[in-house]
Length: 195
Ligand SMILES: Nc1ncnc2c1ncn2[C@@H]1O[C@H](COP(=O)(O)OP(=O)(O)OP(=O)(O)O)[C@@H](O)[C@H]1O
Ligand SMILES: [Mg+2]
Image (cartoon, rainbow, N blue to C red; front, side, top):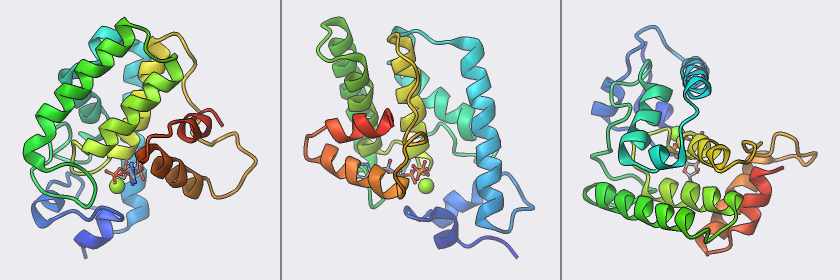
């Protein structure tokens, strides 16, 4: 018995070819899949700890893809490759490369001109990139780890993403903050990331 696609994708279902990209044959539950992804992401964190990339290296499409590869390549064959299918979140797949280049150009400009404090800059990048939705899956986790790497390179501690908050419903607060960011208000997402 294998996994079905609705089941694997969760909020953003994967299509048949995308499911075919699963490298791990003996997985039968969503929880097992989550564990494998989590272990892979842990190794990506170790990789980051040895590299400590600089801002100018982070804000490149090579690094954006490399980070996704490091996070998911042991689980998914399409790790680090731009999505070719439409999803309920994200731009038309043909626009991914150019929209990402535009975001990275903007971000380099913000850094150079100190347009925003480091937390806000990293969270703006996080929100814009998750709205582009470069990859088939794992975009949320990728965008959060990218924000961590970037804010660290800008001289600040990495974010906590609700882990130290006393308030329940972390997930609900995260999505509420994202919806406010969609409307241009970054403050709740910054506050959430530092909670
Ligand atoms: N309204 C929204 N505005 C901005 N981003 C959104 C919105 N809704 C969802 N997202 C982002 O899309 C992510 C889901 O995309 P995807 O399934 O590719 O990522 P994931 O890493 O698998 O998920 P997760 O973040 O839940 O671990 C959400 O976590 C969130 O970061
Ligand atoms: Mg997902």
